Image (cartoon, rainbow, N blue to C red; front, side, top):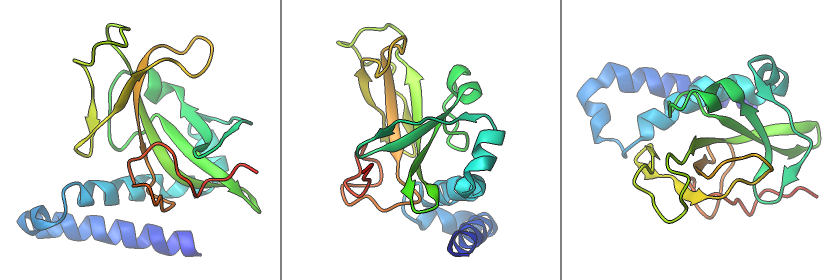
Length: 167
């Protein structure tokens, strides 16, 4: 019920921002965009919907980050679309897992850790990286975590969330 109420508020806020037009520009940078992201990801509070929409489940919980469910179509298209994150972040809960945030990722064009001329941004935030792959076969890349469904005391756009416990 809480998630449905949150989603309804996010959708209403998005509609209000559209209706107000210029007045929405006075809000904090990216606030309307984040409301849209919440609206389009609200359905993933049901992890079965995330899997049905192409996110691959994982059984490895990364401390401070949770479970990464990657959508390969979004990952492989090479496009950073704020409303189509490459990864959904789930955290352990008494009922299995619960949606906590999203992650955007993009392959580094020149595969050189010493250069960052192609660093992407989302919501006005530069991606972290370039960094080596975290798993065999993963290329040098950039990523940006956005903790839109679980508070992160370190900051909404910080990779690690001290409130995420895999234990």
